[in-house]
Image 1 (cartoon, helix red, strand yellow):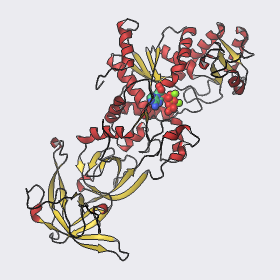
Image 2 (cartoon, rainbow, N blue to C red; image 1 turned 180 degrees about the horizontal axis):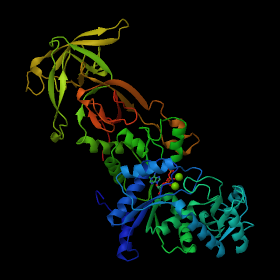
Image 3 (cartoon, helix red, strand yellow; image 1 turned 135 degrees about the vertical axis):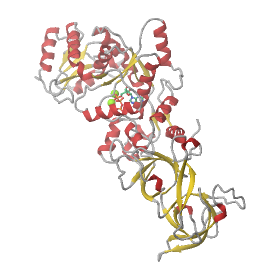
Image 4 (cartoon, rainbow, N blue to C red; image 1 turned 120 degrees about the vertical axis):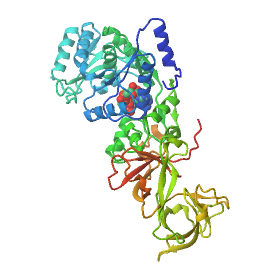
Length: 549
Ligand code: ATP
Ligand code: MG
Ligand code: MG
């Protein structure tokens, strides 16, 4: 791991190796292909891959595809791409559906041992019979069916003779167990549905709690790392391993889920945002999906560092999204070239600059990383500055352009605002300024000082560009468990699109190139909306942060 920190999972594994309980480490990342991965999954990926790596172990990517109605190969492909992009190579690539025959055979074994039975109760009745936390459950009237009858019925289930919901196979454990998960849980259901992998071969499908331990055991997983909501399922996980007589006995270990502010962290909800067109896809730059973060401009390094910094514990706290932003700033600081872009342009004419003259100014590509070298920026009589960098009637302590004031143009000269040109409606459309040749940047001029430094681009040579500025997609994630749905918290102003200009040396930027625009923050060239005529820049983060580690 990048900073070899210890955590409770590694302590368990270390002890397992030292005591000889295990002689190797095999983990797996087991997504259900029912949506795109989000940053919560990134935590699971980092933990599984890096933990195994630290002990020279292996990690499988396994698609937990036991629910045909929600799963799709589109998701399988997207998940593979995201795991690779995050920087991880899996050892084995598996599908739970590859084990359907094996799972069926294990279910038959349970029936033969008197440990499973076919139950005809309706789903409502099953729920009712299950009891509550304070009341024990009641036995199903079908609980004492003979093994032969169960075998025959289960085979008929498999052969498609029953409708969805009419029969299930249940593990026969204990209807009065204090752990509700052990009250004869359903292990197979009828579902006449086409599966993305096995087509119409099956019309019965195993339930997660039955399937998962078998998948883990068949792959020789040693440590099955999952999130805390499965803690109460662990006794069932172990029951399945034992009663199905699995040769390998993986150990389930739970860790806390990652949640971050201003984001929903559930594929079901993220899918709703996509389906109801609050966003333009799973990879919309406002989404907390791995593909959305990638399109926004986050780097794999920044996501990995963020996840590691949040730590591994049993608790599922909420992490401030400012911390994620902190790590991408840190990562891009030395990597991203600096440049200037004007997002909301205002024309400035430098009246005492010679017409038809153009000079090339030298500027460092990254003052924090001088090895990146220099760039050249043209300067001439007409430039664009930011509309926000001019005020006709400024408040005190406004050091940018206003009538009579002088500012520094980054990398160029001091200019002084002499005249404000307005259209018929009184809107400011142009400024007339003068420059002072003596003040050229780098010339060592010390004659006088100015308080404001602003950015600009040369009007004649500037390249048009589009900028997309983002605010949080979800305004308040605290209401998640009330009657208000998260959709009520969607921010209607989460995207602002503006048309501006960039330095001419930027005309050939490519998708995913990343820059720090002076004063505006870090931006990524959008891979979907950019064309050869016009680049579209997604703002990753602004420069300012109140976040402290
Ligand atoms: P969702 O509710 O978003 O669909 P899930 O847990 O159902 O999430 P899976 O595809 O089953 O999604 O998840 C694959 C792995 O990722 C599981 O081991 C799961 O525990 C883990 N995981 C999912 N969400 C988070 C999270 N927020 N933090 C940490 N791990 C997570
Ligand atoms: Mg799920
Ligand atoms: Mg799940």
